[in-house]
Structures are given as C-alpha cells and as structure tokens.
Image 1: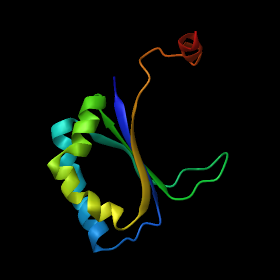
Image 2: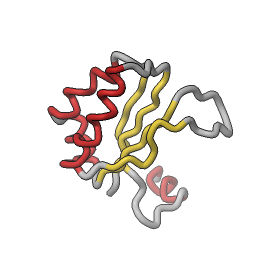
Image 3: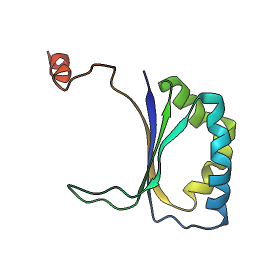
Image 4: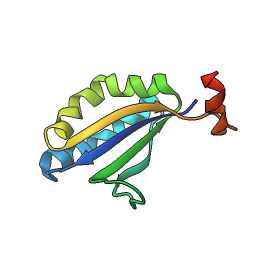
Length: 109
C-alpha cells in the first residue's frame, strides 16, 4: 500500500544550506521509489489556521518510506533542513483501493 512522507515547513530560511538540501534530496529518493507529489506549496486554506508550506512524497509502501528517512543519504542532508526551518515530518500509510469512509466505522466494532 502506498505510503507518504509529509512535511509541514514553516519559517524556512532560503539560504545556501536549504539550496544544497534541495539539490541533493532527489537522489536520496531514487533507491526507495520515492517521488514528489507536492513540493513547497502553500495550500489554499479552506478551514482552520495554517502557516507554511507542504511537501508530500509518495513511496511504494511504509517500509520504503521508513528506509528512505533512515538512510545514510537522507540523514546526511536532514540537518540542512532542520537547522533552517521549523517543521514537522511524518509517514502515513495511504488508504487501500476502494476504501470508503464507512470502512473506518467497521474497525470500531
């Protein structure tokens, strides 16, 4: 099942370190089948407060996403982002094909 690495970036200092991070991140995704779906986009906010930009990277599965994040290649550049932004990052599994919102109710018993 597809999994997603998602980052919410705020207060990004667009300096040389961030530029280096951007130049190097693509090569870290290749071995894990990752690809950008959304990169550095400010959402059109419909409800609630939001500040910053959104990044979404798709991976074939949760294991690939976790392996990418823990990989030496990504860990080497991660401080370039964390030193120059406030951010939250997480991995989530996608919903399977044909999933319906009511499927969640079935899990509740």
